[in-house]
Image (cartoon, rainbow, N blue to C red; front, top):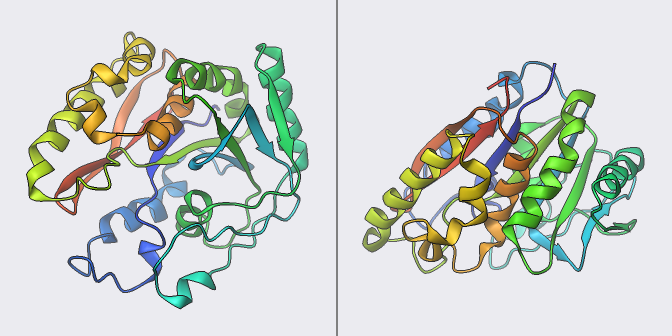
Length: 266
């Protein structure tokens, strides 16, 4: 059975692993609960996870192939304990090679990075998704230029992984305006999220709508820079033409944040 693909919000830095003091203490609890339940909601346990995070960009799509990646603590100003977190999941050079083969088969150039570790868009959510760190993980970068159509195409190329037991995860934030977490932006986040739900749930129009996401209501307000939206394109592209749904929704720091799932199994 094909696994679905998912696009998840990865929160704010190490928000799930600290006492949150920038709002109500339970601000991130609903999202944490969703991430903890993600594997249980799948039709089968994944053999591996391929993550596209909004925190890695490279000249070409690049695959991390380290067998035991280190962690990159690419967040700033958080409690010292959050820089001691661990996530000892194995990498998978074999899966990294398979990803490159699939991209090449679709005429998409790619690179390999045998050294780079996992940024917080990978290890922070996956500490909740796979708390035993017992599922191999491989990270794929975004491609410089941040072209939505290119990331949809990469997703389509990677679709066969779903039949091979690989869970494809886009890790970003559906609202990522760092100056736009306040009541002044609530209505705009609702409008953008309504557009997003319409796109996610309409496979006949989804690829075209996502390729032109800047035309969405408040698209550039939600994403002044689109690196946290593009992981959605890879997840959606890998289930092109298949059903989709909003899998999680919450209001966080006064704006709406959503997750999405795609594929026949959703």
